Length: 148
Picture 1 (cartoon, rainbow, N blue to C red):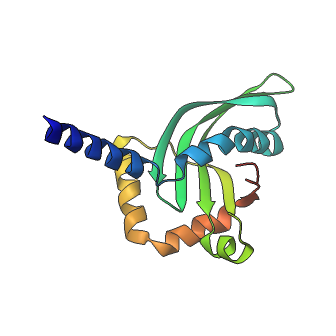
Picture 2 (picture 1 turned 90 degrees about the vertical axis):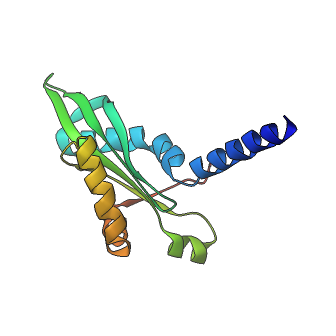
Picture 3 (picture 1 turned 180 degrees about the horizontal axis):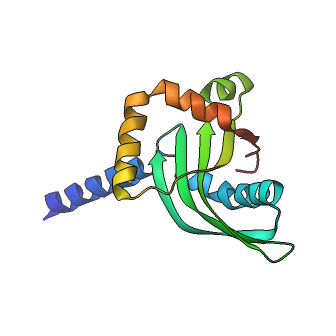
């Protein structure tokens, strides 16, 4: 009985530690603010935008990508709905040089992927490696995470 308990606890510890490797928890705290900024700046949305159908489509220790629908209203009352991707990237090089964590983020209009589309996207990301990471890094704006 004692051996089974140790096995279960060990397995739980492995699951918990694996779940904390990605950037999703940090990225999610920044997502809403960045969506609000982009919807306001580029589409004239006033107030906060609502993000619906949010799905994590890629997450690792240096890159996290969510997709969703951003919905808001313009000053004239026009409803705006955009399919978006939120990109959150850790810049390991700048982080190492500066001595503090440095992230970049971006919101881009993009096709909303189905389950099969997400699987295909993950496969392409894993095959593309460094080249795709650099492309996403180049898209972003620096994020201040000094309070984290």
